[in-house]
Length: 99
Length: 178
Image 1 (cartoon, each protein chain N blue to C red):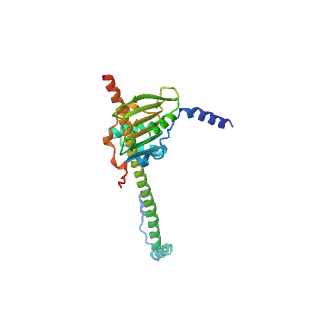
Image 2 (cartoon, rainbow over the protein chains, first blue to last red):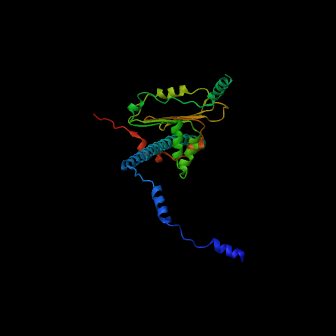
Image 3 (cartoon, each protein chain N blue to C red):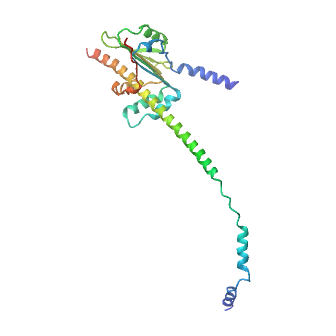
């Protein structure tokens, strides 16, 4: 029974002291720092820098891709020419063998 | 100092194993040609080309296998309007550059068709092919091919014929007719 009365005592409803709400609100107002908005030109500058970086990277990749494709085409031409000449020689050798 | 000597010795031992590049550039040849194919691909460009070869395409897959072992690809092919428009001594000048490690494996001589000579560079063990030189001389066409590095000749011959050559990479000269 003692425990029950202790709990009741501890959880007893108590009104806040006078002026509590106004003091809390005053403190909240004092702690709120004034927000500084970034100037618009900073956002524009960041956008330009990002565009330049991404654009430069995209152009570089495109140049690299074109160089690679050109090199691939040249390799295929070179190897096909070489292959054709080797085949010609092989055919001649086969013809001689057949005779 | 020891490191320096080690590097020198390593380089001296490795140098003879590296296949020989043959000079295929002779002044005046392209000036007289109606059509020229000039391909020089080595080093980084060769590796880059290898990355762009499509594994799905059987021809490009075979090319990729060949290219992965090569150090350089050099091709000069000239087509002339008339027979005898190029100096035949060019062929001798190419042959003269081939040292004792080069062996002629095929010679095809024909009166009405092309003459083809194929040489392989077998420096090192005398068996492994470390380079290939093809000289194809016709009355109206001269083709010189030099592949530097180990070459699988069978794989090379299995590549699609000239019907697969993209026309865009061929330079065609418009001859002036006065």
